[in-house]
Image (cartoon, rainbow, N blue to C red; front, side, top):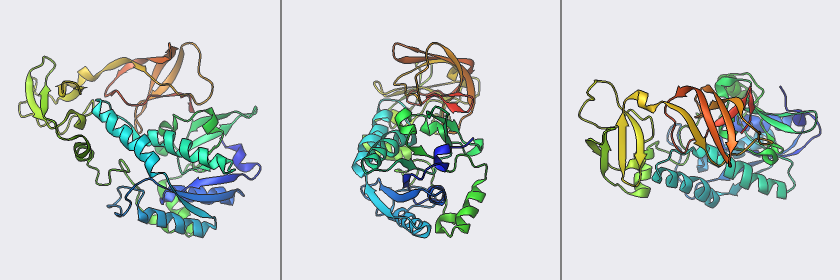
Length: 361
């Protein structure tokens, strides 16, 4: 499965370079394929003075320098674009507001939607570029009639199509993912970077949420929303303990509940519900997490919207497995039924539908 535009006429390509190994190799491959490539690092932090801590964080001065050095080795022009304000509004503030409302957001998905394939792509097209290139592991396949589809990466272990499921038809028309059709291990990608002379070959991957460098999501939210003590209750409303803020919990969470009293059956308890209005967290047994259907709002389609009910596979989290579903658009909402009950479905998550390897939306 190949992306034929990458191998046809040379394109003017804007390569988003985070300072990591994947985006550097992607830019190098695009240049090697004969495209006219320009590298750009997105400055997404208003205060990028602190260097990364271990493998956490991104958007630091260190990252921009690593990206610049990679561009120099590849032999392409390089710029830094300041999108910190847009990132703060569309990603960070959205993240905080979602948790405050008792939902569980995915900031990587929101960043791809609002920053890399909206703000960045709009600016790239205005400047005369044909495509935006990133180091994501996914494939864009061009059909004989010229339309394009988003597919899973050849290597399922590295597939990132879930966080790209928000891309629409117009955005797909200008997307390039040079790593998507490669069945290689991350060690082989690093070896390729080393062969190309890219110093980021041995740089550790970033993890977790890029704007929370220390990985303490609850501490970050507490600083933004303040501590607010509330009750932890069971399904009958019996008070089991207290918490410092309902926003610090997610549906399906087992650890960190700090309930001193064991359950009557001796089994672990999980977060079942989060009520921001009453600041209450409800916990209970694992089987109470089972969900057989859901309603999804704000659907976005990677191409033409499907009509009528259809059978698909669905993915509910970035590193989750697939499950078979039937789905149908009803009054602008997507009604989804699962072939078998699934657990840990939280409001705020994205559900991405697949037809084989193709991302439906």
